[in-house]
Length: 409
Image 1: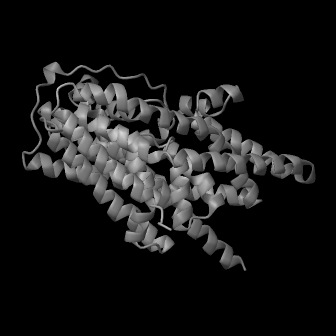
Image 2 (image 1 turned 180 degrees about the vertical axis):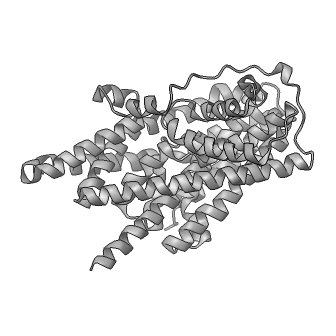
Image 3 (image 1 turned 120 degrees about the vertical axis):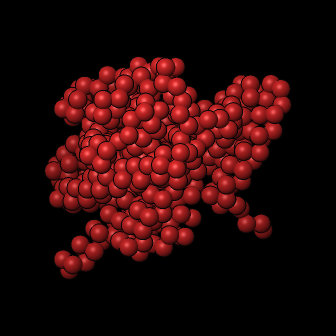
């Protein structure tokens, strides 16, 4: 009997095939249109299926995880560790992004584009407190239908805590959650099995339609951002998993590969959640901790975005004939780190964060128009990095909680 290819292997093959087909279509008349009209829709169907199960997966996995912990103090402990992990790594990501960008700029590798053609209208940001208020839902069903993940997380926390507090009277609700989650897991496995189709179709479409932009004047800016992404994944995430969770880098990246590649092609941390959960489980993360950390991370972890906006800031400043001082760079790190909290769960958070940083430095926000055309290419890498960070965090927090439990015995 032939051994079936593992999901990571299937996704890797689909990724390579997608690149090959995309390159072929790029040089065939009508090829890019073919990928847009006939291949991309299948990727869209797959992503729609993932988004369809994201809310029930997050809701029931988080409630089940909270009930499994059976202790609100442990829930609080996991939450604090998770938020601290993401804040620290986001600050490090900003530093890595600025170093890479300044090296490229110092070597004269960044193109000097005309800022006169730049046009971009920033989305309005209501402020940190407005975002905090918006976290708390006014209508549970509206939160579900809008797939507002921060609100879904808050709902899960409230219900999980309430069922736990109800004790014996809440037993029926416990059983219902466990039963529903078992069904959702089965559905999730079926949808995940379709991942190679989604990866192939999206990759072919991206290469065929975005190929000219990759080869254009912004290639070196993209390269700079991707070098930052790779350094952060190797130096911070795999090192943290190795030092704290005792998972060697080779095993870590092999285990996280499926989620990383799907995040890369779909550009959605939330849609990648089911795959991330499977990867975290395979790597040895505690299921109840991963059920809490991964949904939270998919919403608030913006390390990839932090690197992107630091590279973009230095590039845009260079085009505007501005040389950032050390003091201004420190402001970029602080603003970007705080903005990652303030814009959590906000649509188009990456651009809002970049607009906030530019405004702080006195650079016209309209200059974002210089790079907005290839934003999806930046987005692929930053989403991949964010998902890698979510898995690393789930491993680290799982290990810390297990060590804490052993210390009490």
